[in-house]
Each structure stands twice: as structure tokens, then as C-alpha cells.
Image 1 (spheres, rainbow, N blue to C red):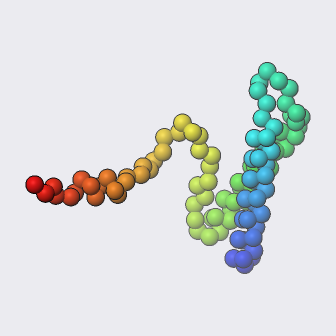
Image 2: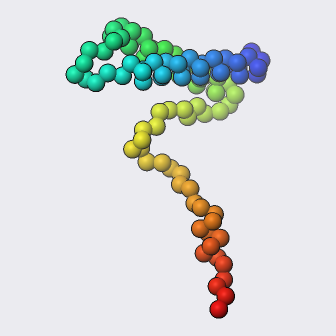
Image 3: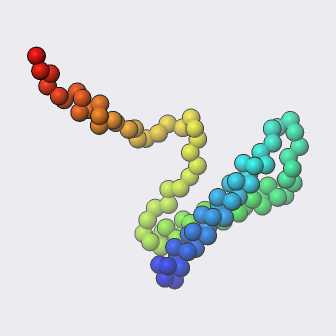
Length: 97
């Protein structure tokens, strides 16, 4: 399989994954209401997510990369932080008297 085919396949997988995610968000229903999708359809969507992720992992493995794509939650701690260079520059200036 050529690199162009892998890239096209990855784009298709990401598009399908994004579409399924949008469907899940658009059909979100509070627990006290009946969900518009049947439980079989919900399970099929979950299975699709699983197949898509497995294929993305296989493609990344074929390139020798680690597949680290996973959902992040709003309250999940972030491993990185942003430092403002403007604040840093301001603290290193010598004050003139």
C-alpha cells in the first residue's frame, strides 16, 4: 500500500469518526428521556468507533509510530502548560532609575 493510499485511508477514517461523533452529540438525550436511536444502533456506532480506532492504530504501527489519539475530558489534567513570553520579557528588563 502506497503512502498516498494510507493518507487517503486515514482521511476517510477521520471523516467517518468525526461524523459519528457529531451524530452522537446531536442525538444526546438526558437520562430521563427516551433516546431517539435504538440500542442496536447505539451499539453499532460503538462498534464502528472500535473498528476505526483499530485501523488507525494499525496504520500508525505500519509507519512505526505510536497511535495516541484518545478522547480528552474537560476536567482532565493537561500535561502541558503555556508560558507567556511577554511576561518573561517584562521580568528580565532592568529598571532605569
